Image (tube, rainbow, N blue to C red):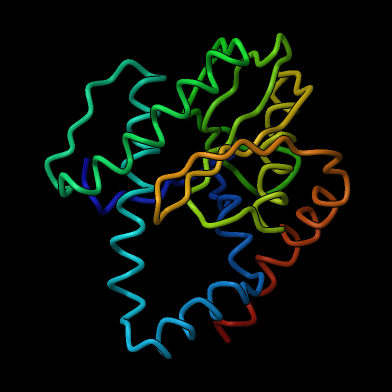
Length: 212
């Protein structure tokens, strides 16, 4: 697996290029990231080096789970054995979660594009969980932040638009520094979806203004 993965591109049926959900959410301020970088700077640490090492652990864990779900053979040649070992701890915890909830995968890593709204997204995992059709999204982070809930709300609506039932939404968090695995069951995401629709409308306007 390469460390430099190309971002997905999404097109509606008429060939119109639309931004991904992640790109749209990029217009939101993320104070947690700024605070984290500032705190590291006060300790005399380079946030870029810490970020890259931490990202490796989370990326590896996500990749290994993705390979498990798709049946692919993982290639970890680009990563250090120490980071791979930490990532494997998260994968073991995921396996326990999978067994405990009787997960039956329907599909994973599937690109979907909305014809109603100008955006697309890649579904990490759509599966039966506890007998219910569910959206599962993997996050490599130290916590679950509001923009993540907005993002999974947009993914749930993508699934519904394409005829898939969604009875529950889950964020499967992998701590990017420790490899710890935590399951978060989402509640009502109605307001998060309303916020995303506003952001999706604002994004192209922002792009035009910034180019002037």
